[in-house]
Length: 483
Image (cartoon, rainbow, N blue to C red; front, top):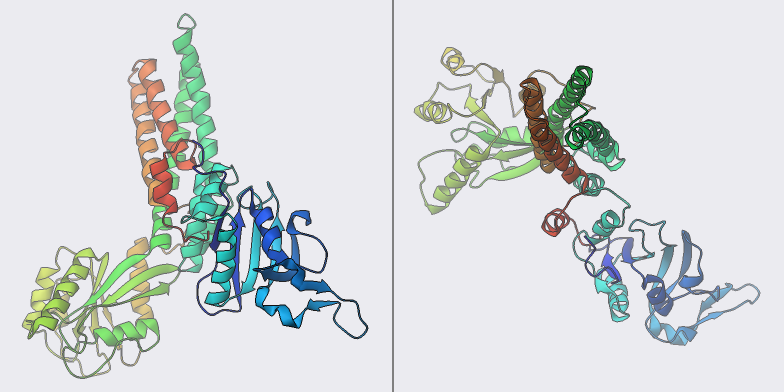
């Protein structure tokens, strides 16, 4: 499949809009150097199309005749400057970088303009480039061109987004490993092993008079087992990778005034929620992302579950219940300075089918809560003082234990956390397992070969050796415009 509008030169602002020291406008395509010639001037009496690749040049972006910039060689003065009466043609003072094809991110000619980071300056530079024949890039189009031009495989292209969106050091590490091509390398190795097996089987199909010897069947069986084990290992590690990439959804809930907002503040290590002695202070859900031992945790403080007194509380409680339904883990918090209330008992009953971590708050006060009643419903109970930030580390360890089921290991072997990859690996592994069973039961060679072909197709889908325009649109539409 060819890139649509492959002859277009595209441009986008590659940095966030707003006030900043530097803003980058990126241009890629056949006309990138010609357009740069029309808008950039410097003292070297050269145009960008004459610059060597991977060189950086200081000058101006201009919107009018380029004769406004002159070279001056006078004693005790700058070697070159701008005529003071002609500043109206100057858009911005910039640094321009040239990267010629094929040694660039997209394998096309790329020009990057580092201008001042103000909104007006960047928009004027962008507007000049558009006026000179470029078009605005679509989301992820630079990376899409890098993939279609063979600069990256599809797993590496997806890893670009993972690196950008990484919320923790561990998530960043997985994205970087995938970007380096280590995941693709493993998939390619497995693909080669399956191709070798398929070659033997197809030779048997094409030349039936030359039967495969029993020793060859045994060897095929061993190779398939090896591929199956490798796929299982990748699947196992990818589950950890998905957690590190996407995080987990944790909801703090409980009856009013048990310390939910205080607990959120303690976990965040800053004042985020308003805390008062009045019940019902939190009137809406509050969400934050925190890093707990490399795990991105989207933690949500909810309104206390009570009978609503007005429409606002009714809406808040509806949102709280929705968050509870979607949660991976619920932290159910109790007031240790009071006996269990009917509202506590009701929540325990409603959450019996959810994964719940029980927390007793206010351990700094005289204890009145009936622990024995809680012990009947929960395997683990963590006592804390959110107000005094005591035992918060124990709660964090309990959350990590939930993620890794007691095996606290960031899993450096995790090569991907991408759900698309996981689904395709799982499909391939199931097909190989089916092949093993078919081989063992002496199914026709044609059926075995077809299953292996289907397993190969799954691996090809991961790498982008097979793709549809819809798939690419789905992947790259998640990118920002400048990447």
